[in-house]
Amino acid sequence: MERVVIVTGANSGIGLALCERLLTEDVQLRLCLACRNMQRAEAARAALLTSHADAHVDLLHLDVGSMKSVLDAAQEVKTRYRKVDFLYLNAGIMPNPQVNIGAFFKGLLSRNAIRMFSTAEGLLTQQDRLNADGLQEVFATNLFGHFLLIRELEPLLCQSSHTSRVVWTSSSNASHSAFSMEDIQHRNGTEPYSSSKYASDMLSVALNRQKNSQGLFSSVICPGLVMTNLTYGIVPSFFWTLIMPIMYLIRVFTNTFTISPYNGAEALFWLFLQKPESLDPRAKYHSLTSALGRNYVQPQQMDVDNETPEVLFAKLLELENFVKKKLKSEHLDGDAHQRKN
Ligand SMILES: NC(=O)C1=CN([C@@H]2O[C@H](COP(=O)(O)OP(=O)(O)OC[C@H]3O[C@@H](n4cnc5c(N)ncnc54)[C@H](OP(=O)(O)O)[C@@H]3O)[C@@H](O)[C@H]2O)C=CC1
Ligand SMILES: CC(C)CCC[C@@H](C)[C@H]1CC[C@H]2C3=C(CC[C@]12C)[C@@]1(C)CCC(=O)C[C@@H]1CC3
Image (cartoon, rainbow, N blue to C red; front, side, top):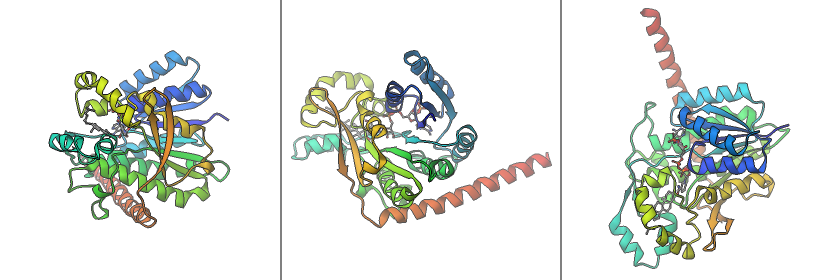
């Protein structure tokens, strides 16, 4: 039977590069591009079909930052497919990023310069906002919408007869210190991106603990520093072009500057080829590119303890209940309002 692969945020950057690589590997796949903007999704589909004319590429409307959209999209998936083999949780945002120039120059002269280039630790802050569901937008998009999607698709992902995989596009910028269990949405800080990515690392560990026995396996990757719309939001593309020789020079010292979306998708693609039982549930798989341009994947243990992932999982379940109740009552209010008029 053909394998069903869903990729969120598939219309650009690392997600689109992954789709291209997956179809090159297996043109028989049923590949589903889950995107919030259908025009961009159509364009991505057309681009994929140019190089893989016989491919089966479906489109799914999914705004992973809107809980109603996630529930509707999951319903649609359940009517279209009988199983999901791979669910790539790749959509992500970093709104209003600010680079701390002072910290950058200080870091440049320190012993931690290489680490700073690979993790951006202490360099980046963002300004987040509330979305229409009353959730912090970065948390909702990068983590909670994906959590809800997994929960809704459990009947297709947790089947004892075969294994399914979820793969999180996390980041080396995920940071324990940016995350607080008392403020999982990061309402009060200035590093919502680091916090959401650290939460996804923990959630993956919790999912493995709870769902491996039901045939669901979760993995985490970091694509390295890649030139995409996300990074063009941090520093304009013309500036990246100007400093590209410096970027290639830095690559000699840190192989985390993967730069192209194709290279960045290496770990996502590599995981597609692995047997889930052979993977380490506590590892983050890094896409790396050597100074000579060779792509490879290296696992690194995540900074996650044994208990905290379960606490986060329980908190997310609580929030799921709350959000679903709220959506239901809004729906009933809407119906009552319509009957009145
Ligand atoms: N670039 C980098 O250096 C790194 C990126 N990452 C992660 O890689 C992932 C992919 O990002 P990247 O390719 O770089 O950047 P892009 O901005 O090119 O891709 C992000 C994708 O996510 C989609 N997306 C954003 N918000 C939503 C939403 N609410 N619902 C559905 N789709 C959404 C975007 O759609 P649209 O076109 O409509 O905006 C786009 O397709 C992200 O999770 C990011 O955090 C991690 C480490 C480094
Ligand atoms: C001379 C140049 C290379 C100067 C660039 C400085 C910074 C803008 C970048 C240094 C490390 C980068 C980095 C990211 C963004 C751009 C930097 C801060 C990310 C945070 C992008 C998104 C991620 O998920 C991880 C990246 C880590 C490294």
